[in-house]
Image (tube, rainbow, N blue to C red):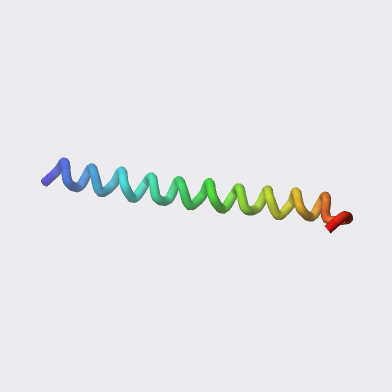
Length: 40
């Protein structure tokens, strides 16, 4: 049971980590396109 809870906790942490990485990448891409948005 404890191993199951630990596995579930690791899955949740990885999901939150991946979501944060995707959000940061989206923010940096948006900033990059704003900086180079003249030729768009």
